Length: 270
Ligand code: HPA
View 1 (cartoon, protein in one colour):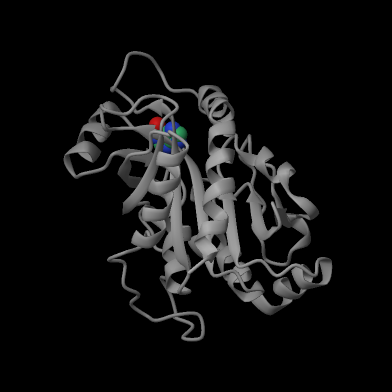
View 2 (view 1 turned 90 degrees about the horizontal axis):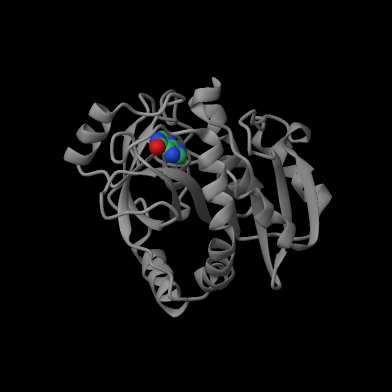
């Protein structure tokens, strides 16, 4: 199945990107910045899960960003949509087969740490998997990776240093933080947010964790950035709604695009 999907990508473009980028809620328009691009709807790639969440376009865009070949996922599948963990991470395996060695993830997240404000970007330093599943459960394919992959540096220290240097150059405030991955789709209760804060989480979301586990299993190096689209439940007055999440994502889009433009080429060097 992986080889079949990979050959679809290979037949559509002569580009062979080493970097993959996943765009979170409200951030899909970044893919429009690519030149020489081909857009492949997920439905055309064998085995690729088709996202149903609002704000997720659902296509793989392969093209160049300022001359750098890159594979951009505009939209991703979430566990809360009912996909099995293995389906959610299947794109990682296809991209690895296609030659991608570095993955950059973006996502929308709620701010748990009270120092965070709506619209902040957070460099994910680590995660806590509370999704109730692991994408590597089941028989292990030794050709993909080891049975018991190490997760002590899931989010590359080297990439984080590059990201911090770029953030500094661009005057973007980008603290590091721990991402708590929840199943969703309901947002958390205030009690759950207090619990997450107590166990060391700074931001909370419903994606990324499964994909990062699979990417690390495949030996890929990972960078991930959360956009704090809202303060988490109980942190501030008021309810959380998905429209607000999408609007904040759109508002920080320009900052994130500037950041990515500068970071992505530097991940390849060295
Ligand atoms: N909780 C979980 N996921 C989210 C949130 C949140 O507050 N905001 C955006 N994604």
